[in-house]
Amino acid sequence: MQKRLWSCAVLLAVSTMVFAQDETIIHGPSEIVTPVFRSMKNISQAHLADNRLELPKFAQRYVHKPKGKDDAPGTDSEGPYAIDESVFGGTIQAYTLGRGFAGPAPNEWTPPDPDMAVGRNHVIGVNNDDIVIYTKNGQQLSSVDANTLFNSNDFIFDSWCAYDPWWDRFLVLFARQQSPQSSWELAVSRTGNPMDGWWVYRINARLRAGQDIAQWPDYEKLGFNKDVLALHGNMYQFGGGFLGSQITLLNKAQIYNGQASTRYDVFYSGLGTLHPAEMFTMPDGQEALFLCAVGGGNQMRVRKIINPSQFWANGTEPTFESNNVAIPNYASSPGGRQPGTTTRISNIDSRLLNATYAHGVMTTGHSVARDWGDGLGSRAAARIYRMTVAVGQTPSVTTVTYGAPGMDYYFPAMQVNRDKDILFIMGRSSDSPATFAEVAVSAWRNGQPNPESATPVALGNSAYGGNRWGDYFGVGLDPTDMRTVWGVGQRATGGNWSAWIQEWRYSVRPGDVDLNGCVDDTDLAAVLAAFGLNSPLHPADLNTDGRIDDDDLAIVLSNFGAGC
Image 1 (cartoon, rainbow, N blue to C red):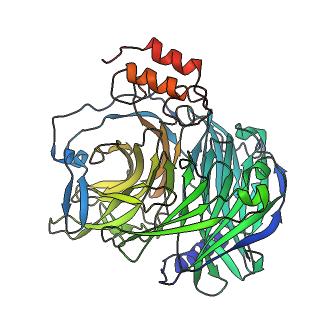
Image 2 (cartoon, rainbow, N blue to C red):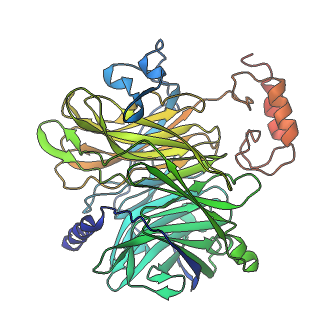
């Protein structure tokens, strides 16, 4: 489609971020947003197919090898690093693979910008054109063009989606830009079943705390805490330059029930790609929304919006905290090399790619340049951050740059789970060893110094010739155990891109609350200490129903002594 390809070119011209040194915060209430109802049923059945790849659930493909050099952290002038030994035949994976299947098919969009979300029974995959609903076994149930869902012929782009376990809702977000108008296009499922219909909101992106500004959002994202939904956009002037990051807050109790809601805007001037985290627990004793960005080539910028839900409860406006933490130097990564061509896989710049939070840990990451000292110059590598974040405290940041000599790694998407493990999906490719762009997964166990070796889950079979590979991959935390992670990435097949959705996890012994491999008195005491609490993601909530009760106690007692 000529319109869409032209619009992509416009976005490419403005997508390189410039971080201003001065930062001010503008905040205040704005418009009242109202919904319309849309159904996903029978919108488009033309592309429905059973594209499952039959794999045993959590098939163990790899075994441990003796201690290797990627068991210990390395560091040099570019900071801490970990070498992916799978490139050299090493297989050090304690995580296991689950189901995997093809995601939304290629369309007229280049690039696709894939993302996904996982609920209790469904998976949703999105790209810059389509929203597709699957069962967890990969059977496609429905597909809808994004313009159809949002009832628009305008240019909509930068697909994003999530599942909110606090309220059992799916979320889909696009940006819309049709000068002089701009908006966030938000869809919220009415229930945890995405086939039951959606509330659709058009949220005016020209408004900033009630003031009309000739601006539009690029690289939009969404995040949430227990009570508040947050929309992000890198705001640009129509026909002008970069302005800053805007966070628009919405009251979930209203939005998730199809009601009108007053929004609350927070604008950070000069600060680019300020990711609101998807928060699966709340900070101890405090309601807050955490956000993060990088800047200056050596700085992690953490921002905190404190008590945002009080605006709707009693009219009290939130307060704010800002922390800038030094991190190892980073620079934008070179494009990924491919066999048989000088065309590289474009992996944009060094902006952060997503952010998730649970039990005090926030994770994020980006693509960076890394010279492995092999005489071949800089390669693309995945930089992963593990941050301890709390209200009133400066975050502590642990960093590792992940990759391998001779290979390029890009678009890492990270998810922290209930055990504070970080599981991530990424792309990788190389001219030598010949590796077409493929999708790989890995994991970084809580308490371990480094991530483990990667596992390729969807291989490429050709070079990709497009001028854009996309802006990100996506991940989601499975609410059935708050431990399993699903992700989507893309590979090069037949000269084009194709999406792949994958499930993987660390296995845990039932009843092992403290994760020491033994179900014993300590685990029993942990359940008894938390007994009666309503607390999603609490370690003692062994059946993940949000409450610590007799069912959790029964799990410990029925497995007592196992592994000891």
